[in-house]
Image (cartoon, rainbow, N blue to C red):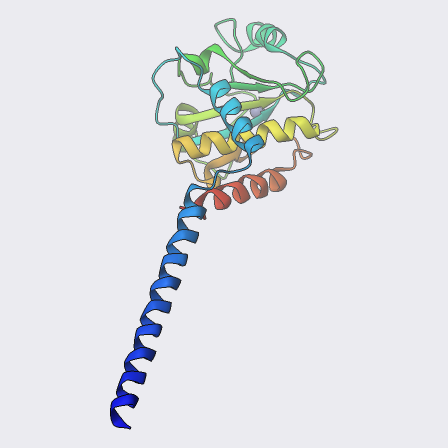
Length: 228
Ligand SMILES: [Zn+2]
């Protein structure tokens, strides 16, 4: 019967429309859940901890930093005071470390401890290193080096990475720090540099696992980008 056939067709269409609406509602629901689903609680706490250690209340307004440069102390132990003395003896005019951040290895500073220096709190560029011991590297022109020094955040890990690698806790802190800084200032991983990338020096030594660091930070950047 033509009439019945038409009503069957209408019913099939209606069911199809309802099914499509249901599927669409489910898709929206899943998307909403994905968007509002918080990361694991431990990860959030760790990120907040790292962020408040890097950007403490009362610090100077942030500068538009463009690079991150990694160093080692080339000593087996060190803390803010010992670096201060080393700088006063040979390099810097003022009694404070040249870098913005220092990461301890358990000898002088706790293993993995992160210290931000007064230069960071005042948002001033790191000290220039002496020209006689560190000529611009072939990869970077002198003008580029000056820019990198002026606009680079310097991070120093305690340890001599010509002789051994950093501790696991130092690497955890370094990965957290580099991720947080690169996220805040939109610094691409290609602008996270080793000191030896910008000057003809061996710092930070061949045993700093830079590839491992870039892989860890890259994975976190991609993980953060996915749900948005
Ligand atoms: Zn260095």
